[in-house]
Length: 218
Image (tube, rainbow, N blue to C red; front, top):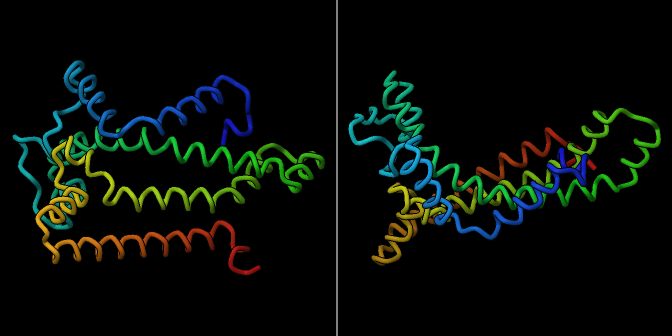
């Protein structure tokens, strides 16, 4: 959004270059590069050995999320270890898939900033903050839709990242069940993916109605 309102600058050029490069980089390759520099060379982050360190006792199973379970049981060693093991896989996926979101966001905002109501608002001398608010309100629904699509894909599409970081994720589980022809497990994965996608888009519809009620009442 900042680059759309301040096009042509250094930040704009850097963002455009990043968004184009991110879409061409495989996520597993970037993950290996990050492991080499941030773990092997600099030692800033832990080894890619799963969800928690070898010497840290796993928190009691409540929700299945190590970060949440460790906080609920006040196991702060497990919490900090699980958070540190989240950084590299999350960073790998974010750096790659945010490129798509950035490109689409910029394209949507460029179109909105050239629309008649924005031109009229500028002609009336409205402050830039108000114009920004108008543009954001109209751009939010398609941007959120893109983010929801990416989230839905990553449910089973992060299998290579799971493999690199030794995570027993849902994507890796789905691939193994297909390889073993375990039809009951495959059906379970499809059911879970369908429920997750359904809840995701229900939540998205609620956000639509909050940000721009005109979508449902026009």
